[in-house]
Image 1 (cartoon, one colour):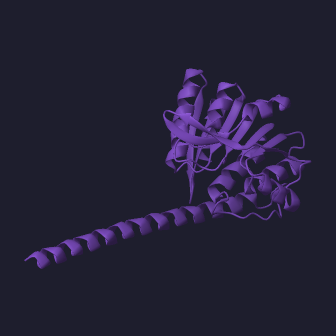
Image 2 (cartoon, one colour; image 1 turned 45 degrees about the vertical axis):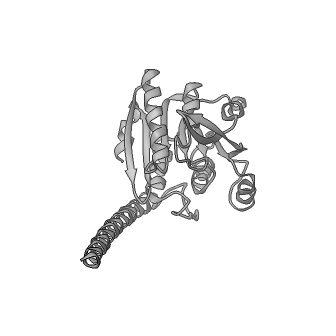
Length: 253
């Protein structure tokens, strides 16, 4: 009888594992399906572009995915933001650089990166410091609501010489944390570095740490009586947009 019960229990466990595996596979297939959709939308959007052309992009994995590149392209192409802050050097930097070079030469573009070696590699290969202000800012550990997280150390001080309020802030750095990930956006808003007309993009919003930070950000915007709208773009990865009310249409491109 004991062995029979054990066999039944094993069958139940095996069945549960198969169900979990099936659910996981379905989720992965759904993500790939969404990503393929955004890849087609992105390619259609940039076809014939006067400024974004012949730029090799490495899409996916640690780099941005197609839903991110699509919404970033539409913002750069149609809104033409003047002051741009990018947290995290990567493939999106190449798009911002092209925007500065061939679509808005007067734009002020700042990219912050924690890894000096990565900066040196990208300058050597595909990023021009004549177009992008690259700031190397190391990270340190801070405590938020009893949880530890990584943040750029002295970010606001490093931005002071530029004397800018930012119309577009793209958040894809520093490296993600389990809790309150990429928390520097809170400091930027607290110190009034957000322009009246603003767009904030949080990449990797599918992760708990980024969601916690966005919750704090929305609370802060309400406290400061800043009106905003919220929207989501979901492919293989998930982006959340927080925009000033005059950019309402951006949440449903």
